[in-house]
Image (cartoon, one colour):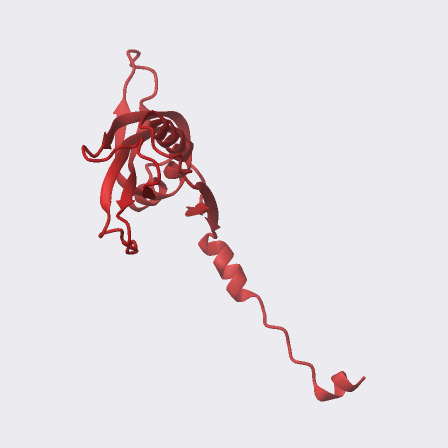
Length: 191
């Protein structure tokens, strides 16, 4: 199973500087015993882009260029639900008890490449929902797997991430401009 992420075919103005953990929490419900065999457990993964911050840093040397950086935050969550006997889970899992949660906020920090102009707000929001998540996803998978092991939960694999390239407007134009094949005339088809 893979989670699709659409990545724009635009140029990348960033150089990856660091990926790090901002916050994390693991919790087992006080009435849930992870050692009890035969429990009907189901998991749900969620992620949400929180925000981004653009910073300008001047090093001690006044002649050095100002470093421009951008940090993107994403909150990831894995919820383990416990289904009581005879209860069929609803699609939104609202009729199930929460047995455990694993949440984390991961940051990815980029330097804006020299000579690149300041990205627009729209570009930064789009980048935070696409490429920034692609860079953080392996860290989320490892964190979640490790936490499940430590919490003595059954291992549920965090899905792989599949990247779906989104064509740029130039490519779309070329696709639309492609002429339709001409229908053969009746005379030509008899030959």
